[in-house]
Image (tube, rainbow, N blue to C red; front, side, top):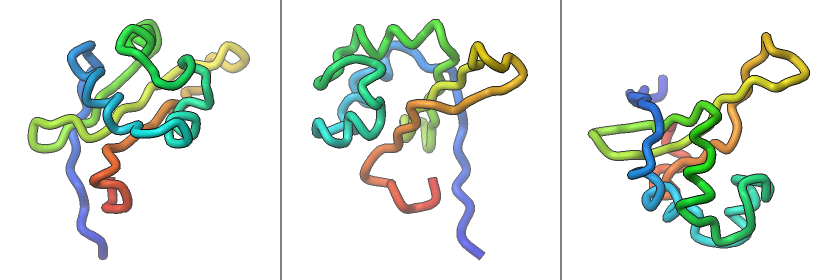
Length: 97
């Protein structure tokens, strides 16, 4: 059995922007993460903060941000909830997060 990783979720706040943007350390990684929907590389704090009107969350471990994602309800199916723009700190990728 793999070790379980305990995370906490909290609503995204604009203070998280610099940390989250630092995880996307190249244009290729950026487009894998955003598909260009959030803007062009490199993304700015203003662009990432524009997601606040969706349902953005920051994943926390030991009081430090380790991940970010947005939940959104697609207009074509209001009973569906999608997780989009999921990114994890590259230092912990592949470790069960």
